[in-house]
Length: 289
Image 1 (cartoon, one colour):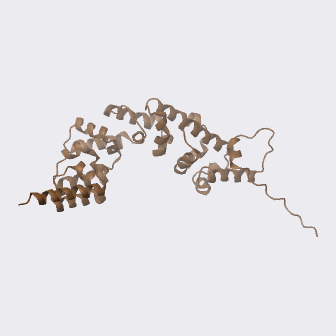
Image 2 (cartoon, helix red, strand yellow; image 1 turned 120 degrees about the vertical axis):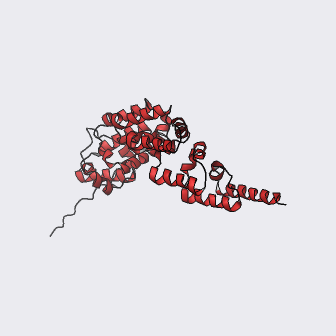
Image 3 (cartoon, helix red, strand yellow; image 1 turned 180 degrees about the vertical axis):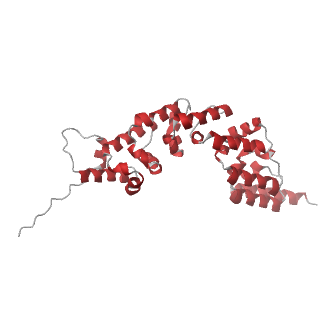
């Protein structure tokens, strides 16, 4: 009996070759479907660092998408938003449905034009903006980004950066406006509240229930301070209540230095804070008769 030996499976072409040739030429022989599928998985896993099984699970349409479309999409994100393949992979891991974006010019170009145009984000900040908030790429310009920008402009934001662009994906009615109103409910005027927000835009990203309320309660009830102190130092809300605010307040009480301002109390590093506290203790001892 003669044994029939199947020919060996041809090896995958080098990844650099895949990236150089996003579309096959007419003279290139058509590879078998199995090989094309393996090439696609190889590109997802090794160039984009995207788990193929996870991506296929969340986006079954990816199974039939040609590798050329993935290469074209990755090239588009690179030339338009400045994203490297690894940057794009980070976006795809969060939003796998983008892997089969049917027409980037129709779905992503409006976002690009909005961010560079009305939002006035400098191009050097564009990549950082998207990496900080990939949701920008999947948000509707008319329904989400434009209304948020209008609200921010009315508050006084003249321009946005990679640090503040993420505010564009926040709902005006459910997120931005309630936080402004909560700060005003503390007894701050609208003008003072706006000044706080412009000094510390991160205020618009914090939770009212999990951040503002417990920290205000500790500020007033635990430390015996007035709300006006956070007007002078809105970054107070950026520090951890359990890991920074409570421990340092306790040390101030123990050292008899409760008169220290919030900024002096929270801004220094641990070493700088302890050094400052020691200096206060020594000065107190030196003043004793």
